[in-house]
Image 1 (spheres, rainbow, N blue to C red):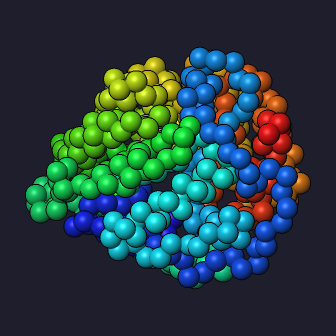
Image 2: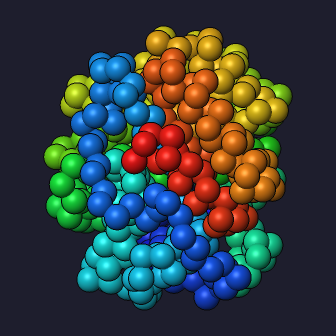
Image 3: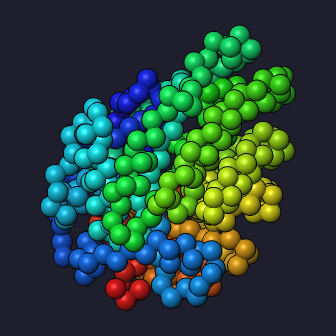
Amino acid sequence: MTSGVLPMKKGYQCNRYGRLPWPLTGIRKEFEAVDYAHVPVRTPRPNATEFVDILMGRVPQTRTPLVEYIVDEMVMRPIVENMLGLSWPGPVTDRESYGRYLDTLIQFWYRMGYDFVRFEVGFAFPSNRLLTDDTAPNANRQRAWVDEHQGVITDWESYERYPWPKLEEFDFHPFEYLDAHLPDGMGLMACHGGGIFEHLSWIMSLEGLSLALYEQPDLVQAVADRIGTLMEGFYHQLVTLERLIVVFPGDDMGFRSGTLIHPDALRKYCLPWHRRFAAIAHGAGRPYFLHSCGNLRTIIEDLVEDVGIDGKHSFEDAIWPVQDFQAAYAGRIAVLGGMDLNILSAGTVEEVRAHTRFLMTVCGQRGRYAIGSGNSIPSYVPVENYLAMIDEAHDFNGR
């Protein structure tokens, strides 16, 4: 969903899609800034402490805060240029240029009215990737996905050859930069780019992993533990950041009708690592939110009771509408987002505004709720629809 490819340090720094920020050559030139009542926010008043307190149920929900997981640069850039009046940063080639990109990122989240900046990069675990043209309007770029048929690790020989990253070579500078440059009142929500199951299935391929679960379970355990150990070291370092308010990883473990592998396999190879990551966050006094797509009904109790997640993100009306999920789990964990992407990407501005108000009315009154997309803001979401959701949320909150 994000764009660009440029390893900063021996290929060890990537987001969940294996990429770094890169200037876009194709933008939505048809987008023209119009007058919105509440965006961009003229006088932002972020309150990261209140944001966390609301979602943890420590204080009454006097407002419904905004939340988002990822905003694609195809949506972000025209807002930055046309509404904020800022220049889009050039290529990320060194720390100075990376700083310009991060400054732009801060201004976007700040002026949209979020209480935080969400950011992720992670180890660049090599995997087999495929490319195709991005079909979003005016997107002069390519999209990548992982080959689901052929993995990089298929046996013990390829496991030993695999170029495993090293924790001591990971560059935490982007996180440290954000930690030092956030405006007063803002916090940082951050994580490793890509989750334990995602990297396991990307390295071995989904088909390869599925076969190995039966034919080479010891190999699956070894790969999962190697990934998990590296990520565990990453999180021990991440939670030392002063402005970090929430550890908020993503790990897509499901599809429309169920989990991508058997729930028992997730319980054996992946959820124990999430439990460890959550314990690291909790030990540092931070909540642990989880973004995970798909139908997770068979493991949701494991996530809440065993892993100890404090909030759940990623909802789809065809699987489990956010208002129904919240009715079942209200008071136990925070519920994040839920604006169905079918509405956000294919609906009218009026439909987006109406559904935003519906979710804030129904879910907001139960408490521990933040409004945002059901998944993320990908390149194919019209800029106007994203802005309509944000503007309506601010209007509802009486900004």
